[in-house]
Image 1: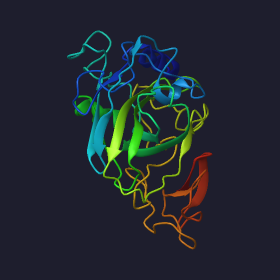
Image 2 (image 1 turned 120 degrees about the vertical axis):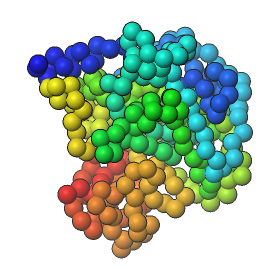
Image 3 (image 1 turned 60 degrees about the vertical axis):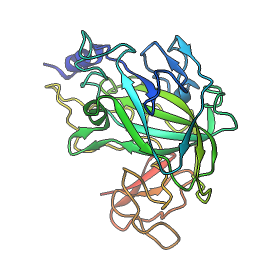
Length: 297
C-alpha cells in the first residue's frame, strides 16, 4: 500500500475529542467548552489559545475553581460529550488510537478568569507539562490508557491569582503536510492560592508560539504499513516551566542554567525568553522554532 493511501485512510477517521471536565467537576463547569468535537488547524488563529471558530456550539461558565499551588490538576477528554466506549469512528471513548501525538498543559495569568476565551489570545502563556514520544509511546497513548485523564502539577513558585489553564492534544495522524495537524484545546478557569510568587516564568504568545512549518507540526508519523515509525520527536513550543528552572517532562538542564553553564545533550540551549545555557556539553545547538533550540547530536 502506498504511503499516500495509508495517510489518507488514517486521516479520514473523524475521531475528534473534547476536554470536557476539570478536576472531576461536572461537565463544562469552569470551562469554555463546545459540544462540537472538531479541531483547530490554523496555528495563527486566535482560536489556538482557548478554542473558537471554526469550532462551534460553545457555552461559557461563570465558575472559577480555587487550586492550591503544588497540587495536581486534571482535565478529562471524551470523543464526544456522550461517549462511553468505542463507536463507528473511534476505537475508545477518548480519541481514536490512530490520532497519536504530544499532549501539554499551559497557564496564563489573567485579571479575571471568567473572561474566557477573550483573555486567551496574546502573550503571557507558559507551559507546565508535556509528554511527547517516549520509547514508542505517545502522550495521546497515555491519555487514552488513563481513560481520558490528562494530569499536571501547578508550580509552587508562581504568583497567586486568576489563570487560564489550557489543556492541549496535538494529533499528528494527518500532519504530513502543512495544515494537517489537529489541535484540540480547552481552557479551564482557576484561581491559584498558596504560591510563593518567587518564580517568574518566561512567557510566549498564543498565537505565536507555534509556526505552521514547525518540524513538530509538519511530520510523517506513519510508514507505508500504517505503523507509527519516528525514533524521536521534538515537541513544538517552549519547554515546561518548573520552579527549579529545569524542564518538566522534557529534556532538563542539570546545570540549572547561568553563565558558563552548558546544556546536556537533548537539553534546551536557546529560544525567545530563554535565560539558561546557550552552549552544548555535547552536540550542536539547533533551533526547532523561535522559542526553542535543543542540543542535538
